[in-house]
Image 1 (cartoon, rainbow, N blue to C red):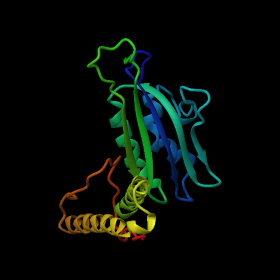
Image 2: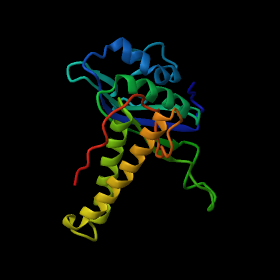
Image 3: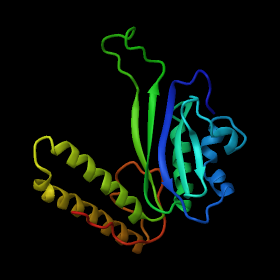
Length: 210
């Protein structure tokens, strides 16, 4: 459970499309690892962020979307809560979605620190989705976007079709390996990336956008 002496401020940010039949009770149960970590007794109590200007955790029942812009104090053990949450959200999600998590080192003071000292700040992206294909699709889309944004400093977008094709090839190979391993009843190989949990079930290959 988080405490005032915790070494990190942890910010969770993301927007997850949910199935149309998702109820508040189901979402409350899926997010239980978060609000119990914050010391709350329910999602309503735990949805408030440590910072008043942040919207916290919100369930848009009309648009069927979970929105998170929420900060809690904690330690490295919060990662386990994230894993449990993502596994539960897989079952409620309508499509793949990224969840960004930032750990801010509250014990590091840049002005007072020794020259060789380094902050323990950390950033990771976790993914949820109804199927492995949905998770891989959003991973692929984010990687393509990041790669193009970086390379457009040096090349025109029209020149990057081959780069995108190679990224698609890598994800196709990963998906084929996953399907083969599931058919053999073995754990998925080459899962890679920062998965918040493993989505179960089949699905189509990620679409290839050029």
